[in-house]
Image (cartoon, rainbow, N blue to C red; front, side):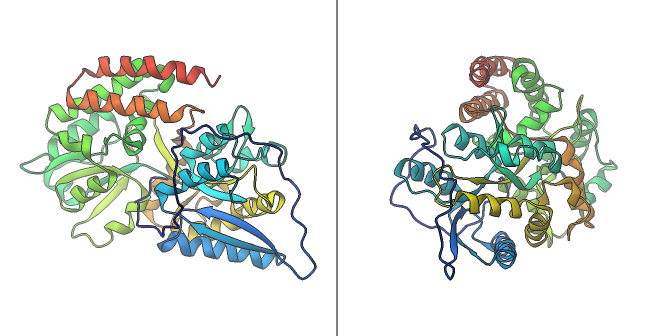
Length: 415
């Protein structure tokens, strides 16, 4: 998801297992709902990590609307801490205790499908590609089949301090060259030009991959496109415009530096808008500066139906509602998230917010981290290359070449 990790309500399980655990056989799909008597509602078990704050009230509102329109169904939600949901789903798949559907991070969708945990929705949902932005839709696809539906989205843009820009006499950068020049111009004393998250976890991958896509390349050309992206970022560190500490920065650390006035720009997502409401300076949001191409990273949530769920048909009905124009608008209006649906562009409660509109307008160039069954290993290779290149352990070219050698066979294994 890569919104600000809040302390979400934790529903404990006795044990957890790693995502790399081999999943059990998917078995036969239970497509028939458990029969309910005329005076008994059908209960749909739903898992998510949206149990706190506006995300929780938004999902409550969307579920309530579904139940009002479908009085024979009752939705039972269980909310996990963000870091525990994926582990619990895999554990449930092995132990035979899974929900009927779940709301999951877009980056986990393909992994769950590869483990045989998700119901193939191709026959009923596979023709809906034109209802969603390309990036979110791609995150639900594997081997030409549909294993989920996009609920909401987010992406990365450039936040900037208007006061520091005015003092330095610079304007908002739109290209890599302009970003480099601007970052250097606003660097002064204990203030540096730009903060990103380049930490060795998925946040680092999420934030650095846009620079790879902006070269016009992708992970299948990482030896060259990765080298160009890493060389560009290393040059910003070398000229003092970016702190070398970014290899340890989370997205929250980048925000902390920005709100403290220690950096003039940061790369971050729309979840930070509410966190900046009370800062003591004027700021704005702009699209990520482009290299050879425009590109940003896609985050958000998808709704998936579990292969071994007891109420598969009811779960599909709920998934359809939550991701429909009606359901998605309810959720996005209450949560402040972006919709994955083009038909809701400009129609959300916050669409009139100029800063949020920047993120909304970038959805057409938002890339999903949808690289198949081996993505966890792919991402780890990218993270290592980021650390090696930006800390100077290896040159950007050496780091990218080493990572590409690991990434290429992982991508080929999904062909």
